[in-house]
Structure formats: C-alpha cells, structure tokens
Image (cartoon, rainbow, N blue to C red; front, side, top):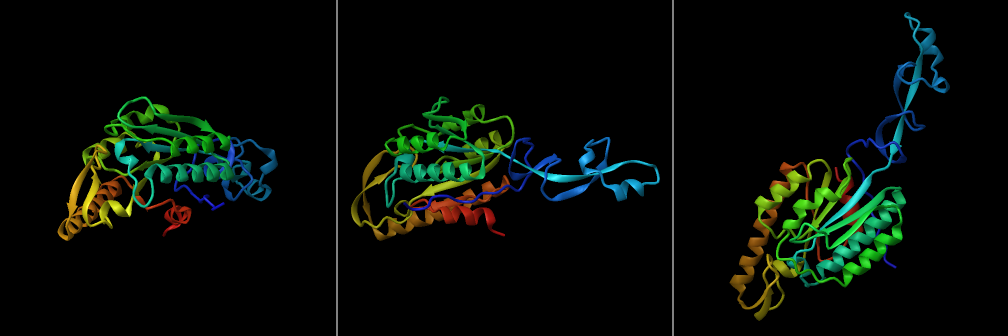
Length: 280
C-alpha cells in the first residue's frame, strides 16, 4: 500500500495541557530547559536549582522550568460544492479522500485528535466527524467520500464552519478548488482567523490545459454544469492564462492572511505536504 502519511508542524505554541508532540506554552515538562523561575511561581522542589538559590542575595529560591510539549486538534475543512465533483486526470473527491486518510494516519502517529467538516451551500455539514483519536473513524469517512458526488450550488456553507471547530486554536486544512469569488474567500479566512489555516488548493491539470482538441465536454467551475465547447488552440491558451492569473490572485490574497497556499495538482502527494511545512 502506498504510504500516505506526512509530517506537519506548528509555528506557534499550543496552550494544551495534555502531553503531545508540539511546543507548548505550559512549563514543567521534561523536555528542553527554558529558564529559571522563582519557586513561588512554580513550587516544585524536585526542580530546585541549588546554585542559583544559594547565590541569590535576596534569599529567594529558584527552580528549573523545562519545556512541555502538548497535543492539538487538527481538522480537515472540505468544500463539497459541485465544482469539487470534477474528474480530470484524477477525481477531486478521490484526492480529498486520500488527503483525509493521510491526515488521519499522520495525526494518529503524532498523538493529535482529528476532526472533519464537509460543507457546501448549507450551514449543516454533509460530512461531520467530531475530533477523535480513533483513526478507524476517519478512515471510514474517507471511504464514504470516495462514493460521494458533490452537488451543492455554492460553498457558502463554509462560513458556518467555525461553529463546528473547537474554541481553542487548532490546525485547519482548508481543502477546496477555490473556484469561488475572492470576496467570499476573504470572508471565509476572516471567519477562521482564530485558527492556523492551511489552504490546500485541489486543481487538476485538465482544468487549465485540457488535452482534448475539437469538440469537448467542459465543466463550469462554479456550478458544476457541463456544456459542449470547441477547443481551439487559442481557447486552450486563454484557459491556461486564466488559471495562472487566478493562481496569482489566490496566492496574493492568502499571503495577506499569513499563509502560502499548498497546491496539489492531479493527485495527493504526501511528500509535497511535508515539504510545505519544512520549507525555509
């Protein structure tokens, strides 16, 4: 079986008190030494620093404070509108399911809880998995996704996603083809500002540079409707240019929210996800 796990990491410290794999704001662990603190601030005689205490002219006692590492909750937040039903070199729902499997395995290995929220044009999720450390539940959901055919007329339901996410800060993978107005994307990112959001753009090479020529069946990226078009060389060139311009606008807007988008084109690549988190 092809490996689907990837490695994610945080650029911030979690407030979680349960031991885990991520840097935490909590002190008193057994990991790297952080600093000395007054005994009254952290009354743990096991960590008493004798040299600092004996050398304090005011007679204060000092203890070592070590880094504690904690758990987080990770979520896959999926756009299930009609455009996500596109099938080119790969089915977008299959790529979404592969990513969900990869996230389930990766979060389980890291010790984090994972949840899933899939929305289209309604505020009620089509798919919902509350945060769990039972990897089997997420794998079963991924199998259901493979059989799902998105039909939602828009992605407006994503604006309701925050009510299904935890109040504490978490890592959220926003999975979509982002074929919706940039004004809506701005609203969506603002609604998720409390969390660390990774925009995962699911595109297919056939969308921007279709291999067919002559009469071809094309899909409207906003509503999922199909129509017949004559693919002339000039039209294929214009499609490619339009996608590049769209990509540039997406990157510019998401950078304004402090995040580079992760583009997955034509399939799920766990190594590409790992490189995203470890670049630079």
